Amino acid sequence: MRVSATLTASALAVGVSAKNYLGFNSGATLADRSAKFKADFKAEFVTAQGLKNAPGDFNAVRLYTNIQAYSTNDPIQAFEAAIETETSILLGVWCSGTDNIDDEITALKTAISTYGSDFTDLIIGVSIGSEDLYRNSKTGVENDSGVGADPDVLVSFIKDFKKAFASSAISDVPIGHVDTWDVWPNSTNSAVIDAVDFVGVDEYPYYENDKGNTIDNAGALFDKAYDATVAAVGGKPVWVTETGWPYSGKTWDEAVPSVKNAQQYWQDVGCDRLFNKVPTFWYNLRDSNPDNTMKFAITNDLSTTPRFDLTCKAKSETTTSKAVSTKTKTTESSKSTDAEDSKSTDSESSDDSTETETSSFSKPTGTDSNTTATETEDASSTPTGSSGSGSSGSDSGSDSSSGSDSGSSTETTGASSTPSTVDSGASTLKMISVGGIAAVVAALVL
Image (cartoon, rainbow, N blue to C red; front, side):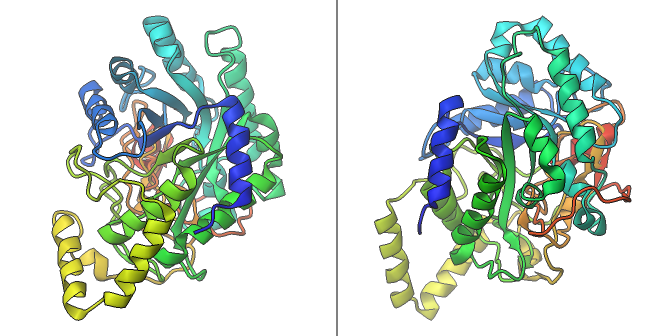
């Protein structure tokens, strides 16, 4: 499959200001909605760094909040775990469902004061917000995706953050915003692009309804979304902050969840397009959103032996293998493959894989984002019409809950499939428990 010329150019541009990090997303709560603590985060980071046959060093993590789940403004314990495992951190600041980010700032200042350079040297960037524009768009509102934020609010928070840390050890760390790919070409959101140093894009071809979203077409759909983002952001670096393919769950239009397809997506999009070319945070190492039926985890119980072989094969080898497979496919081999996939996912797949979602472009919200105040988790568990952009919404399980009221995860499980034409700045918002509001939302979204 081709590597888009735009992607290649963008990757080179990103290389000027950032290393091509490899990592996963990590929310603030577990699948049972309980808070993650240092040991939980450390287990994730150790597994990520020890994955068998990984095509690089997965020693970075993307967080959704700075606040420990169910606290007001205590630093999230992921920071200590990152220090002990030397894991690079893309910080997250939860911005939806709140009129300020004071608690986020307080938590981060406390961490800097407590851990010093052992902590700040690991910070590779800061994302002010996660899919806020999508959730506040016309499509996001129609999909009950949770509370979002308008562009002017995000710009204000970006300014507040920069001012708060202007004279700190992280004053030169790049500031960005993460959102679904289709909000970036929307001129309504241009002020956010102008205010950031880099753009984070969440893209899931799996949710690209009515676009031929078969696994074989996933790479082409990803190229289209990524290229549209690059074209819209005026030369600013584009980081891929969420992408993946579920191994279990509901069929989404033409997209079928299975271990085999998850592995093919890893190869076609991860290996051929992203890994070691662009800063990439895969969705995901483990599932944490109990409300999401789609399951994306590449490991089972944080085993360093992944659900499928992570080895990146040469394109010619991959193409030949597919051709041979097509020619020699028999009823017996088909049954064998189905049995293998079923065996690999017996603990999490079940009957979900036979159900079919019919809603167009539904974007599950509630990824693993650990946001503090606004929960978007519920939406993620049930993909709600969106076209392949967005966060790992439907299944990823959000475990990012922060704040004393948190308990909702802002993880958009699965992949938030966002329609390609999203109108940002919807005048009305639907408050739901999917992503959670404020701290609660952040915890469950991811």
